[in-house]
Image (tube, rainbow over all chains, first blue to last red; front, side, top):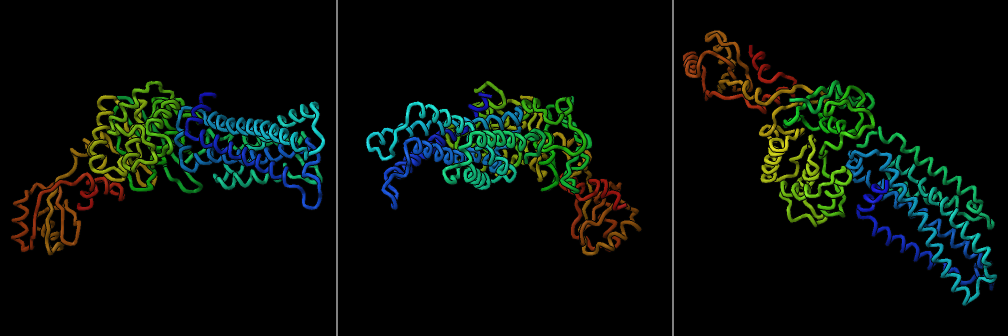
Length: 231
Length: 314
C-alpha cells in the first residue's frame, strides 16, 4: 500500500500540491490578520470576543479551506486520471483497482488532516503571539482551554478529512472536476455555516458522523470498480 | 505451438447493441496476429476485454491457457499493450514514465528501459517531458513502454498511427524482432491491410463485431487466384462470346468495361484469339493476381474472398 502511495506521489503532483497548500495557509493567515486588525465599523470592539473565539474562527476557516482544497486533490488524483485516460493505463496493471483507489484516497485523507492540523498550529501560534502584543482579542486563553482546543482541532480535522472524500461520490459519477469542487463547497456551506454562534461542526458528533458517511459513501461509489468498464 | 489467446463466443453488448458478437479467436505463442477490420468493427473492444478494461457480457477468454475470471489481474504482468491513443503522465520525462510503468508492473530490471528506448530509436529523449513529444514520438514511446517489461503477449491497437514512413519501417522491424528473438506473441489491430500483411502470420478479419475469417496469411497467399482481366468496350458481347462460343463459365464482370476470367484452361492467347475472331473489341487483356487487399475486402463486404468471385461468375 505504501508502495502505491509512493508511486502516486511520483506522478509529479507533489511539488504543485505542497505549493498550493502553502498558498492556502498564507491566505488563511492573511484573512485572519485582516479580521484581527480591521475592527467592526459599528462597534469599538474587535471581531473576536476573546482569544478562544479567535482560535475557533481560525479552525473553521482552515477546515473550510482544506475541505475545498481536498476536492482539487481528488480531481487531480482521480477525476483527472479518468479525464486524460491514464486511469485505463493504471487499471491495466496487475494490481487490484480497489487498492489503487485506496492509495489515492489515503493521500487525500492524510493530506487534508495534516494541512488542517499544521495550519491551525501555525496560525494559532502566530495570532496568539500578535494578540499578546496588541491585545485586541481580549480575554487570554488558559492553558487548559488551549489543550481542549487542540483536542477539538484534531477531532475536527479527522472529521474534515473524512468529509473531504465525499465530493468524489458525485465527481466519480460524472467524471467532472467542477462537480467535485462544487460539491465540496456545498459540504463546507453545510458544516461550517455559523448560525447565532452555533455551527453544525461545533457538535463533535456531526462532523464525525459526516466523516463516517464520507468514507463509507466513497467506498460504496467504487466498490464494484474491479468489475466496471473503464473505457 | 500452443495458444496464448483463445476466446469463445466473446460478446459485448451496450444495451441492445452488440459491439462484439460471438468472437472466437485464437492467437498462438510467438506469432504476429493481424486483427483487421474497418473503424468501429470492434477491434479495440476485443483488446480491452483481453486487458480486463471492458467486461464481456457473454463468452469466455482464455489467456496463457487459463480462463480469465472477473477481477483477476495476475495475467496482466505478462501483457504489454497500447490501446487507442498513447497516454502518459505528461509532466514526467520519457524515462520517468517508463520507470513508473516498471514499478507498477513489478518489473525490477531498470536496464530494460534503456534497451526498449534503443529499440524504438528514442535514445537521447529520456529526460524530455512527454508533453514536448510529437505524436510519432509518443507512439514509439508507448511501444517502448509496452515492451520494456518483456511481456509474452503484446496487444497493439493501431500502433502505426501517427508514424512517418521511416517510423513504420522501423516498427515493422521491431515487431519481427520481438517475435523472432524474444518469442513474443503480438496482436496488432489495423484498418489497413498493407500495415499488417508484411509482418502478420495470421489474419483475423472482423466487421460489425463479428470475426468473419481467421486464416494463416501464407495459405491466403498460396491460394490467391490468378485471373485474366479483359478490358473491352462491349462487355455484354464479350460475356456472350465467353459463355456461348468459348465455353468459359467461370468469369465475373467487375466493371462496365472489365471482365475477369478465373481458372480457365484456355490461355491468355487462346482467349484473346477467340474474342477477336468473334468481333469483341478488346482494349487490353492481362494475366493478374487477385490481391490480398481484394481478398479481405471481399470478406468484409460479405463475400467469401476470391471463392465468391468464382461462384458469382459461374
